[in-house]
Length: 242
Image 1 (cartoon, rainbow, N blue to C red):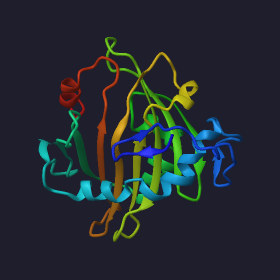
Image 2 (cartoon, rainbow, N blue to C red):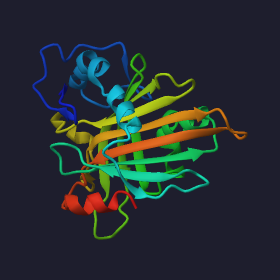
Image 3 (cartoon, rainbow, N blue to C red):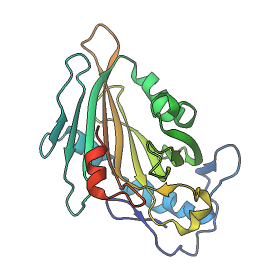
């Protein structure tokens, strides 16, 4: 595991050194819940090619997005959708103002992602941080989500989350997400009752707004994710922003 092609992690044969311990990698709650072969991602790939800069650029880019929601005057909330080259799955972007500090938002979305996810994701049912790399501010996350319809099975997702400051924004931060595709070594992690979905592109970016009386941040969210199971892509493209 460990090759990154710009849209997701792809499987490769593990190198001979895969069994060596990595001091920067630690399991959460004592012991790592994934095979040691996964360590090669952190050692060789993650620090160099995780697409933090690409996600910041996509969020700030004004070209190529088609507006789905008109902007709400009070919250400045708007939603957008765009085509991604060589993919039938569309990407969406949601932006809005939140009356909160960046630190409080980070606590919700990052520091206590599992503990507080039900506060902002009504379909969340289970999650776990499998491994943490303190040096690179990265975590391996496994999440399960209930289905909004009895006709559709629950979904699960295994992905890497990386935290970094936003360039040129004092107090801003970005959380970027990418799934690990076809992780044969990690099959034991998945709940077989869930259909698997992959995050091809995903990020939250938070920027403090300094010219308001109430502490406020501009929050951006982008996502391109496969629907999983037998849900057709065209239906997913229609319903992801709704």
